Image (cartoon, rainbow, N blue to C red; front, top):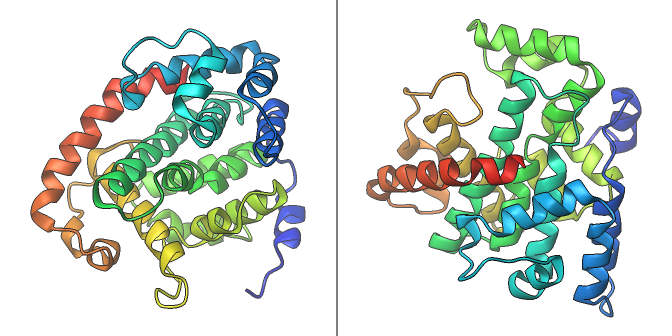
Length: 283
């Protein structure tokens, strides 16, 4: 890559803060001696976040047999890796200065892709399910960052997209020095996320990853690419569904060898799961 990530971060300017509790949880999860009680104590320091985590844990998406009433119980039943996903998903809404219609659409796009990617990964074994969830969650974090740092300019960009002047990939160079994919990858690097998550965010749209040299990363990124397309087809995080999108022709669908005959049923499944769980994740 010809552009240094730090240069990109310096150019962006004002960055949304990662919630302190989320940062602490990620640090604790890297320590093999961390206990469920210790994790629960950390999350409990942010009452709003802990309430959202419990709410999501009790959603149909996680299919618990009985109601989860305490954070420690949720951690024991769901596992530490799922807790990381829950905390980050619950934190996403807080990465906005305001929460109007545009922010709600960005949030729905992120949660929808996370849910879709996890469903795909679990059903077709295309990727690790928790990594797929996080990669879907953060694939458009660059858009969130650009909207946070320069909201008026970002809204002008989105209005041009809505006016039919072109796709965001085609138009964003008119408004910003770097693409949302590059900005997202640079910010995740600054936040010390894994290299796999950084690269899948960078290449979520172009799939520019060598499938032979890095097959696991390629399949993860292709999973996110398919999930994003499914969301676009359903209109999740969009003003209108993309009725013209032919899913069967997507390079990611072909690369993952997904059966085109299964895509309509998959669309319906993701639509139902998203609609059932939207309010749990919004918190």
